[in-house]
Image (cartoon, rainbow, N blue to C red; front, side):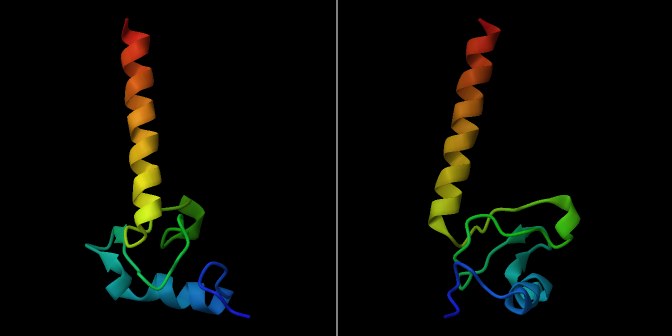
Length: 76
């Protein structure tokens, strides 16, 4: 019933409040959390990348590469 792709609100709060899941207090790294983009520590500030999930890191690299390509094309 309870999967890590759709964790309960209680589990999400537990993960967000655990300092062991935050590298330098900024980067979210939780192998138990399978979500690509979990909310930031302060949820009102948006979403972050789960650096323990290779799919989210890959997706972030693809987005950055597309933005770099688009900005290079706009300079021409």
